[in-house]
Image (tube, rainbow, N blue to C red; front, side, top):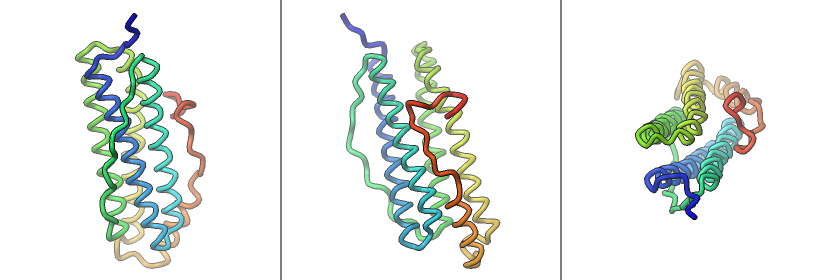
Length: 183
């Protein structure tokens, strides 16, 4: 008996997103290493935590595919982009990635509506909400850096920004514990 409850197209789209989330994790890990190397341990810690969150999102996709009778396919992950040259470029890269990820999430939502796959549509609503938060977080990074003076910020301003990000909550929720009300 066939127990798969995902179309072949949906299974592929979800697997692709699972891999996209792992790629995001590598990008943020790479950016974190860059920041750490530049002496921004607070910013690095923030990016490392974000890398773990993206990995958790990947696991959430994996578990959903398996729970629907599919088999997630792990593919090669592209290398992260080259190191940013400035904090502005780093934070802009974070924002760009989140916007790209939102676009990919919306394509899966569109496909779920086309296929009348309401279970997947429902599952994806958590990610729609999550992307609102992720884009806001990335925009806030850009705004905080602008307030600090952007790439011409004083050492004192950058120290304060780095310290603020270091003191941000350090707990990364596990994907399997996430809910719509508590992502």
